[in-house]
Each structure stands twice: as C-alpha cells, then as structure tokens.
Image (tube, rainbow, N blue to C red; front, side, top):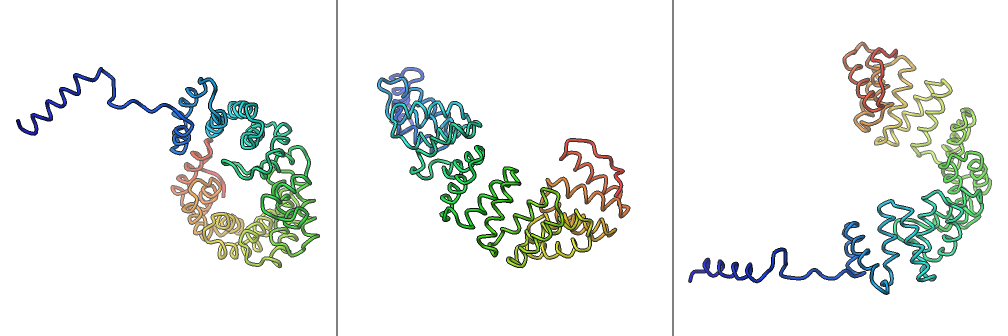
Length: 341
C-alpha cells in the first residue's frame, strides 16, 4: 500500500474513534499558573473566565481574588477591582499587594479618604503593578489638603530628603498640576528659600505667575531661571509666551529664537514665533515657522489657525481655506475662511 493510502486509512480511523467536537487532547484544567500566563499574554477575558471557574471551587485557591482584582484593574473596572481586592484582604489580611491595589482603585474611583489608610498600611510593599504607591498616596494627601504628608510621599518616590528643596519643588509641581496655584507657589517659594539656585524652581514660579495672569511677575521669575539654568529651552519658550501676552512682540521673537535653537524638535516655540511674527506684520516669515510646526504636530489646532492667518495675510486664499478646513475638522466646529489676519 502506498504512503498516501496509509495516511487515508489513519485519517479514517482517527475520525471513527473520535466523537464530533472531541479533541485528541483534553484542555488542561484552569490553575493560578495558567491564569498568570494568560494575563502575561494580555488575554484578560480568557483569564477572567478561568478565574470564574477557580472561584467556584471549594475552597477557593489562594490568590484568585487578587488576580481577579488585577484583571479588573487592567480593564479599568475600578469598582469591580476594589471589590475583588477587598475579598482577597478578607481571605488574607497580610496581603499587602491587594491592600495597596485596593487603595489605588479607590483613589481612581474618587475616594481618596478611603484610599489613604490602605496605602499607608501597604507603604512597605514597594512598587506593584502599574501604580507607584508613593505617587498615588501623595495625590490622596493633596486631595485631603495634607500637603506636608504629600511632600513626604513624593520625596520617598524620588529618594529625596523629606524636607529638602527638591522635595518642596516636586510637591509644588504636583500641586500645580492639580491647578492648586496658591499652595504650589508657596511650596516653590520654600524650595527657592532652601536653595536659590535649584534648577527649574524659578521656572515653575514663572509658570504659576502666567497661570495667574501676572505677566510681569512671570518675566522676573523666568529671568532668574535663565541665570541659574541658561540652556533650558522650555524656559525661553515660557518667556516668549509671557512677552506675547504683554504685547512685547520683538522681545518675544528674540527669546523664542533661542528656544528654537535649544529645542529644535519641539513645536511650541515655532508656533509662538509664528504668532509673534504675525503680530509684527511679517506673515511670510511666520509661514516658514508655522509650516514647520504643522509638520511636527499635524493635530495642533493653534498651528493650523495661525498658518491659515499667515496665508490669508499673504493673499494665498486657497492655502488659507485649506488650513481653516483642517482646523474645522480638528475642532469639530465651523471656522469662517474669511477670518481676519
């Protein structure tokens, strides 16, 4: 009998001895190890199904609820994650990972006061999953207006001394990110008092002044930053913004030129330069910078708007129309093509 005939016979035998839908090897039973493997592969739905099977066992295997909490957390289902971590803690009160992750989930649910004691208890557990406990604990303290405790948490995250200038500055940055300008300014001032030459401290104070509409104060602080840190392109960018807001367009152009040289791959200085040049009635030069900005950041609506204005001021109506149409798509609102430059 030929090789092909033998293969046909073997196929028929296999078909006859296997019932419909039956495989030649039974699927392995779910286990904590198999769930971890599925999670590592990003197969969270498959992992959840195996966890459901494991949870129905009596007794439930250790670690199932913690893994379920992580799966729910990764799927951004915070209430379900918090509930799973709570069950894991009830089964094992010494489970610091579940304690910590329940605190993180509660914070993301907008419940910082409930999260704080859990995060404090699990503080020694270190970094787990995708959340830094010191960072989240610091944010919880900010929400509770416990700013000194927040500083200590952020300092621990960065291995700073808790009362150092660096600890005050990172706390100021976090407070400013939460739009808490008054405590942010106070923390930044304390950082400067401890170390007047601390890089980025005066820049942050300048940014806070800009956020408060204090252009002159911003220029003073940004000038101090440049004396301490003369090659920081972002400081020149912020100073250019301040000069633009104060109507000092020539000065804005000067510092933004420096920003472009120091940060050639950042679109912000090019956009602000284009705006300054438009205010100086130089749309042709403005176009050069704004076209560069659009290539670097095609989704930036400000760049398209200013480029449209530059084209319109130069008599290039079709190009202006194109830019305003792009702007309309980006903003989802009608923008008149006849906008005055």
